[in-house]
Length: 255
Image (cartoon, rainbow, N blue to C red):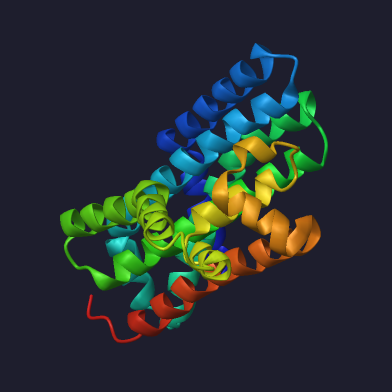
């Protein structure tokens, strides 16, 4: 498995898309952090970029890469190698390369120009979102045989979590604002890794006005420490569930 991961990782490091992804993130990071002496504003700008582009790029690129690697996967499966190891090796190599691209693109500028706990939390949220949406891409790859349909499904998943989910949540809040729905809203937020990552980051910054309804609820009911712990645990679950489902479905998948 280590040999497969190493091969995939080295192959992706030479991939132009991964290199361009890292360079664009680096340019955006330096630009936002140099715009104002207030590092909190720069970090908030990078948070918005992370929440919008990292899920979209991760799931789309990963889906396309998995489908382009079908022949390589079939070749590996013809060898005495378990299906689980092949699939997890593909995921590990891809997720590692995208994570390194994120660390180089946003991690280095942030640690150099705005070091501190908020910067560290920003990197953790970006890495977790990369792992989550790469895992979701793996699940899409296992569920679909047609590449075009899979790319469409990945796009729908990314847009749902980054844009549509908050619309549904706001509709629920305004429809039942006369009832005590605070705890229910906290539960709903756990179903969206992007919202969890947003709350995890905003709990580290003194920006109560910008935190929105979800962040304010976490601050009120859970407090910074427990709220962060809860968010991280939920995000890790979001990594694990798609991977477990992918492995189980791949065992019976007819390539």
